[in-house]
Amino acid sequence: MDEADQEYAVLEDGAEYALLCSNAQQSAFRLRNKSEASCALIENDDALRFQADYQALKSGNPDWDADKILAQLWDHGGYGWLAKQEGEP
Image 1 (cartoon, rainbow, N blue to C red):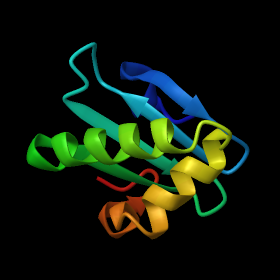
Image 2: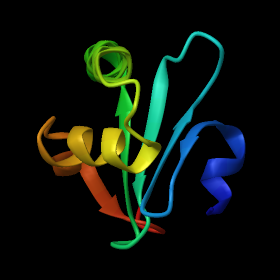
Image 3: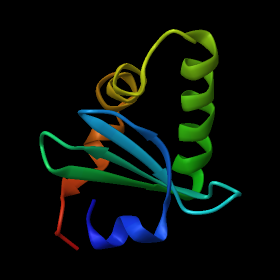
Image 4: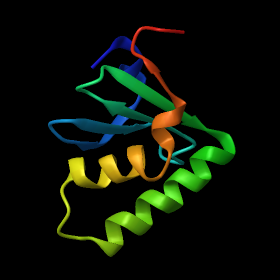
């Protein structure tokens, strides 16, 4: 976890992916791809869409682990396109 992650609470943490949120209102998310050392910051309108996508996957697939849910969001949800290498501004 990098320094920026310390401002966020962990929602999901798998071997390959992690999901963190900024506050109780979940107005911003950090979706990390650990193996690629990259992170997508998801804010504003994107955060609202992400929260709906995340909740739909989680409730629709209760047997999926964190990595499977987050990989779906990263790859098929398109959130990986928002990613930057960790440590980049």
